[in-house]
Length: 157
Length: 103
Image (tube, rainbow over all chains, first blue to last red; front, top):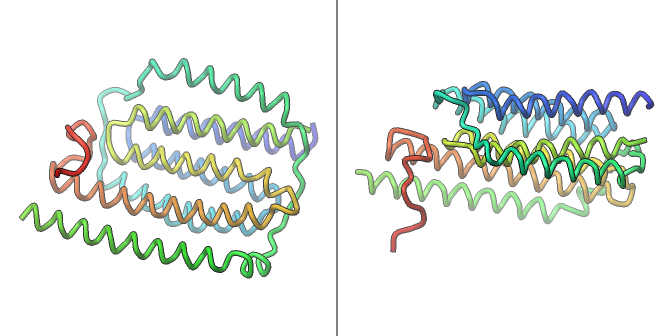
């Protein structure tokens, strides 16, 4: 095994362990912290392959904004159940599915990953319209949600 | 040699742990956390696409769309949490007895 494979194996292991922390933690706040840790490890995997633009997007927007808002929400609405709410019946099919998929991927996905870099100027020219549409969609969604919340406020009064 | 297998197996495990968390969740916060873990698994699954030179920009486009989608999901779930808390003083999904709009 070369160095990159070893780093990936270590990163993959800690990613899986921290995601198990989300599942097994009783407190939502700690679950959210474990989730942020999982996201940081995922972003680090991008950094291993020198995909800097994706690393920056994930670490600054996905972890820095979405992840931290989730941690803040979990801290505000802190909820600790008496027992870990895991539906035990679903654990067996989940482990079976993981085993089958892991064996299939280990057997057939054998090509090496190469280091890639994103051409931002080409991306801007190719996907400018898509990004504009996405921004419009976000604004429409925000307006819709504000209308729904106001309508519900009036109903509650 | 098995770099792509390691990345994809990690993505599969994270995705299925997120599914298990979503199935077992009893409140909206845990549901939000599990949905974000699912998006994390999607990011991991995109790494092999980045290593194909012709598909690099497409993979970056999918990444941007995924981040927009996760932000939208966060927005909708924050509104749901706030509304449910105002109505029931609780964020547990057990208090929701029926779904859908009333006609």
